[in-house]
Amino acid sequence: MKFKGKSFIAIVLSPEPPFADWFREIDRIIERSPGFFIDRPIILDVRGTKIPIEELEQLLAQLGDRSIRVMGIDGVAGTRLKPGMPPSFSGGRLASDVDVPTPANAPAEASDGPEAKQADGSGTDGAAKGASGKARKATGETKTKASKVNGNSAPESEAWEASPASIASGSSIVITEPVRSGQSILHPEGDVTVIGSVSSGAEIIAGGSIHVYGALRGRALAGVSGKDSARIFCSKLDAELVSINGLYKVADDFDTALRNAPAQIRFENETLVFEELN
Amino acid sequence: MSNATVVVVTSGKGGVGKTTTTAAIASALAKEGYQVCAIDFDVGLRNLDLIMGAERRVVFDLVNVVRGEASIKQALVRDKKLNNLYLLPASQTRDKDALTEEGVASVISELRMYFDWVICDSPAGIERGATLAMRHADEAIIVSNPEVSSVRDCDRIIGLLDAKTKIAEDGGRMPKHLMITRYDTERAKTGDMLATDDVVDILSVPLIGVVPESKDVLKASNVGLPITLSDENSPAAKAYTEAVRRLLGENIPVTIPEEKKGLFGKFFKGRAA
Image 1 (cartoon, rainbow over the protein chains, first blue to last red):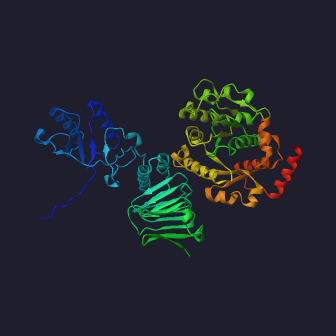
Image 2: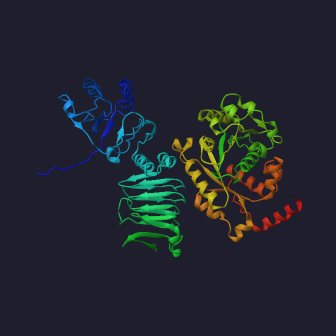
Image 3: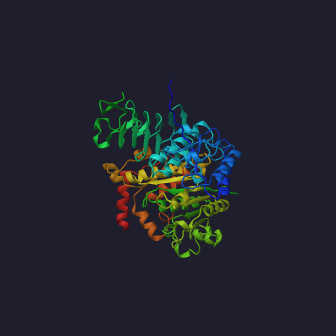
């Protein structure tokens, strides 16, 4: 017999006294997104609060009233827990915050990426704006991640949130307008196709290949999740930097013959190979 | 009623000619007979009043109106020459934090009722002043010089226009026009400068006009008259007048200033100076 390990991202709830206010915040989230807490693993984090067991019991009851089923409690020794209470959990690796959805948004999927959250309401301001269609949802994902890697690119990531032009298909995304200076497209799951040019000062980061049907003047980083079979294609090579699986080359080191030519770049024997396309 | 077209003149980089362009476009539109209002959003570093020669008649300013200390009608300054051209000046003593989003929204929506065209002169940069100036615009004129840093900053601004404006948030696309200013014919010939085609190619925004670098512009600024009013026959004024006709929907080819014309202009200016 074999036991498999599987990891899920749990939502971590850290109640803060006064609990009445904290529950109001929870109610607000539920009101906006009734399904937010349903079918998601939820951990109650009471570390550092020295909460009396009776109050903990009340908390669990009140959460139960809201159909929030707690699967484990962090911060209380298992021996203190009453029978019928969820088991004591400890350890756990902190992941990044989970976005609290606004009304139009479907509940953020835990499988979207390594995200976890403190449901204390502080994340509500940064919540992704209404993304209803499939296309927009993918855009939203791009957005969230862009802001993660690129700490200083908050406005740009919003740019993608507001732009309806990306179309999702499987694990690749298609961007149908030029990528402007300062914008950053991050898609660690797969390919990125841009119909239009990528400006100087813009950046495309893809887990898979990058296709640019236009001039590539910014940076293109393909295969960032360790995929050296990723390639970069562009109709006009004028990039500042290209990289595949971490191996990079800056514009100064490009072969001048390929400058402004349609080109592909691939990874071979620990070097980047530049080739003209037809 | 509220049928004005609100145009933001923006560029990202400073010193490219936003204010000159605002004044020239606003007065050229007024000359066509439209009711026009130019707003200076450069709170703290106002210049539009100087270029339009209205600095001695400013009583209230945009910040006063936004904060409810004066009515729009009190703050509007009428142009000396054209009685259908008005200026809403910026405050020189406050800074851009004095502008609130709601205040700016209500000022713009009120102006929409009185005018046919509202031209917003954006400050340089991508901060509060610039984002508020573009926020409620219907169209944008992107001002770029034919050099790489200016072009890159414009690109950045275009990204913001497609993300941070009311139109973009409502799912629309803001129509954008590219105005290339300070185009030096001689340097274009020797290749010291980006060609117009390259700029258009990089920014992928349709060209509305190419304004040659010219001493006439400086001269006009110094006497406080928009170039389209002071020297109608200068190449720069002609370029702006043409741009306005394109803005009004006429389909005319963009004149790229030529070497010959430039030389003639230089010779002419040399005599005048």
